[in-house]
Each structure stands twice: as C-alpha cells, then as structure tokens.
Amino acid sequence: MKRVWRILQWVIEALSSITGGIAALCIVAAAIIVTEGIITRKVFRLSAIWQIEASVFLLIFACFVGAAFAQKHEHHLNVDLILVYLSPKTREILLIIVSIITCVLVAFLSWYAWPMWWEALIRNDHSMSLWGPPLSIPYVFLPLGMGLLFFQYIVYIVKKIVSLRKGELFEEAKRFELKDIELPKTDSDRKQ
Image (tube, rainbow, N blue to C red; front, side, top):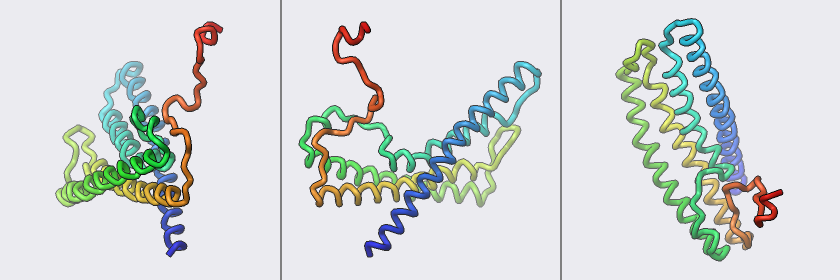
C-alpha cells in the first residue's frame, strides 16, 4: 500500500510540476501576444482580433491549472496573523483542518465545472468575437485545474498528518511573505 501511495504521490507531484511549467510558459506567451497586439495596432495601424482573447485564455490556464504547482510549493496566499502565535502542534492541526476544507471546496468546484465544459463541447459553443474560438478550450481549464489541485491537496494533507504523527514540528511558524528579503531591524539600519 505504501508503494502504491508513493507512486501515486510521485505522479501527482510530477503532473503539478509539468502543469506549473506550462502555466509559466502561458504567462510569458500572454505577455508576448499582448505586446505583439499593441505593436500591430499602434505601429502598423492594423486591427487585431485574436490577441486579447488568446492572452485571456492563456492567463486562465495559468491561474487555474497552475494552482496545483503553487500548492505543491506552498505558495498560495496565507493569512498568518493568528497562525504565527499558535503552538506548533495547534498550528499544524489548524493547517490540516483548513486544507481539508479547501480540498472539499476544490472538489466541489471541479465536480460541477465538468458538466459546464461538456455542454460547451457538445453544443460546439464559440466565443462571440470575430475570432470565435471554441469555448470548450477555456472551460476545461477550471475542472482540470481544480482536479489537479484537489489531488495536490490530498498529498499535502497526508504529508502533514504523517509529519504530525512522527512529531516533526517546526518551532517557528513558516512565514510566507517576504521570506527571501532581509528587512532592516532598526532605524540606523534603514539609513545605511
């Protein structure tokens, strides 16, 4: 059973890494497309009918499908106002509870988004723009991304429970914001 879990965990984390890389490329592609659209309109005085919609589709992909990658590396936004003052064990239990609630919400979103995508695919819905791409393409990003995020949360929750049972607790809360930036501690440090 442990071997099956390790293989499943490896597959989920590999998928999260792959989709995270694709999401990063989508952000770069969206920036290039928007830049090209601006140059086309302002410099060459040509109309562009596909750039905005294509860049929006790419950013939707990056947001929803890239969410599993962000969860894998624990880079989602956190409000740690109270969390940093709790004892390590209480903090880990609270993180597990919040993760379970989030996992349920993500599963709910994924479950109800699949029919939306299926209807758009069956009816062959297209965008109302001049370009008119099929709407099944961006509609699949929500259930796909939330499905991947659901499985990544399962991995995260299991890891947290295992580390809690083993007694592997961090004494200090892991701060997520500004973690790589050293801030000056006194007024004299700020002046230098």
